[in-house]
Length: 221
Image 1 (cartoon, helix red, strand yellow):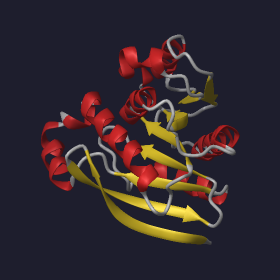
Image 2 (image 1 turned 180 degrees about the horizontal axis):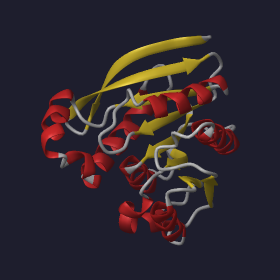
Image 3 (image 1 turned 45 degrees about the vertical axis):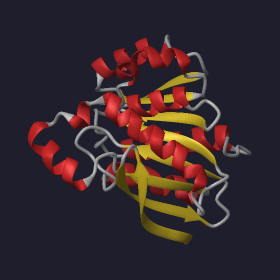
């Protein structure tokens, strides 16, 4: 059971974004999800991971990085969902807003990014070294964070499927750039979307353990 489960709107970067917030009883940290290209806060994969985090006592914030109108336009053009600069600005704006929220203010903050959302999460982490305490990437493109990787000092976990060789190599290259502690976790027999039996469960459990390790005792910066 959870104490609080609400849908809210959050001003961020000149727009208002929609988010689903779940705060378990006695939550000791919070994880903000940065969704990837073509995805949203309703992503079944990210919601699966979020439920595992919630069971471990972590609050979760699943926020859309595009407004409903932007999403409608982007469905036709596909430009904004690959605009790492824009997505990073939105994630950074959320990172700045969340410590002020009455439900989760004061909790240590981690970021969970998927696909292009992983790059946005890493850019936001680089820009907020005192606020963001840890980052997890699922099937992400951390290489798209560019020069910001050299400024990431937080512990970063990169999770990639064994059957996603190009992304594995891109993640390995990104690891060489990140200053902080990094780990690459390759999920056996898993493809890019982790649709194979047990694959998503492995992602959720590995992410849970990483956040529990690095967010334990953390408070908002």
